[in-house]
Image (cartoon, rainbow, N blue to C red; front, side, top):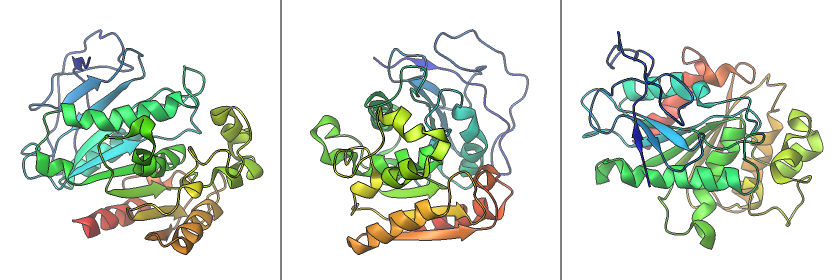
Length: 287
């Protein structure tokens, strides 16, 4: 059963509504302060009983009617519980200013009940909850997953999840934008990214074939386009992650592109950066 909650969101950028003087509620399951929403459907919705199973819906000025589609924002942090959806809040705010509905998704991570398959189940369920938010059918015709770092991995994975009976019948993803994503788990395991973060997620080092259900690089070709936006000076998730994935995807006949941008791993989270400007350009090209 889904339970509606209210969220205190940061003030919107140009094109949004400035929020001030909002009351804070003590709401079970919420990981931050809450507020009254600005319009129908906006705010926090839970999709399960665990405190990490919720998402925050942001609407553009004027509401969901006429929005360009919905962008599911999936935060990173090497799948660890240390990090949360606050990382995606500035991106969600910027997306609404650009005319998109934004669904900033939280999920169970390693250290608070996540791992394999729980983290994947949550991301799938969170995306499927879009059907319960009262959004117009026209908005759900364009569902973009946008994820940073480990969130980029989950964004790409989510686009292929419906092939598996476990998640069949869910909301289809139509486009993927990976921001410095961990798109090749086998390569990431060999590179020891995040000090063994892949093994912590899977419960073992990633292997070819054995982990095809969880690894975007082993799921190519996807039926939807993928843009891999990546800082050329990223020391945390190297550019080779995006390059390896795109090379494999193209070889399999998929539509995929590396978008190289100046900066390090975190430049993608800076809405004033060239990386974010390029990301908005990618979204503009979608429609």
